[in-house]
Length: 422
Image 1: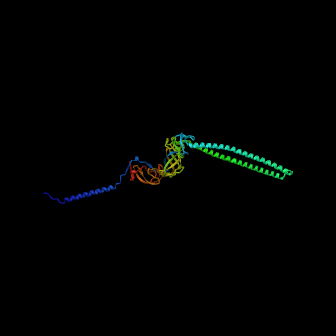
Image 2: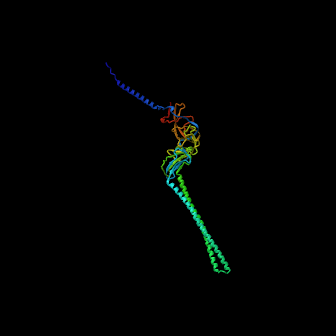
Image 3: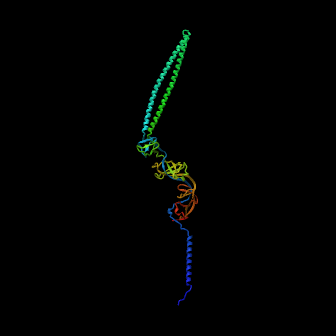
């Protein structure tokens, strides 16, 4: 006979509720423990990092820039006249001397003008010779007139003396003496006038000759100028060097100001560096520099130099800095050769510094991973950078001498405060 059991269903419900409460508490406890866990430390391969040790000592501040070797002196030869290329005697790359003919231009009108002024000069010289003869003839005529007047004066004087003597002897009337006196005065006046005319004529002769000489000199100077201009149609190098540019063709027309050729002295070169404007502000004329021409071995390719000019303008974020080379050029150094240049800004005698991280900016805050003493991990710390050089930067705060830090880019762990080195 079956016995009825009472309260069984109720016990089942209570048991089920108890299980659910226990499970919920376990889940909550597990969630709480998980929330208390710290995130996993990122792992970085030690072989991939760029470590360095913080040092204390002297630091040379330098800035670096790329550039090219350029000639110190470049002779730009320009066309002076409207002309046409007749002959080309030299090409780009040729070594030239001062009297080397580069090309010959032609201008028929200039050549015709030179010939015309040459004949005008010769005609003026012939006219001067003819004028000398005519003026000399006129001078002789006037001198003859003076001599005639002088003779007449002499005769009148003799007649006057004779009449005066006869009058004193009472052999001639007084009227004859007076007539003789009048003729003598007339002859004397005529003689004086003829002499004055001769003096004036001499002055006139000199003036006319000088005027003609001035005309000749003017024509001669114009002829020399025209001849010189025709001579300048033959273009010469004027200096010893190398022809850098010659792009003209025979028959080509050129006008005044057009560039005909560019000549440089290949052994007198300087380095023109392009320095970022943020770094160029500390450069001054006279600072020492080193130019790497990448020619030959590392020693022979380095040339001592110094800053001789800083361009005032900024182009594409850089300033041009020209450095005069103080040492001999290595073999293979030619104009337009690409070079690296390093300019020494200053020498800091005793500072705390480290190799320059790729992201570090001078005089600004930043962070670095400091490697643990055991080398198994690294911790991110705040630092403040000071003055910077090409490959090193001053540590103003945050590190001490002997600390080892990671200089390579750690952008992949920018959210991590620690990393583990594997």
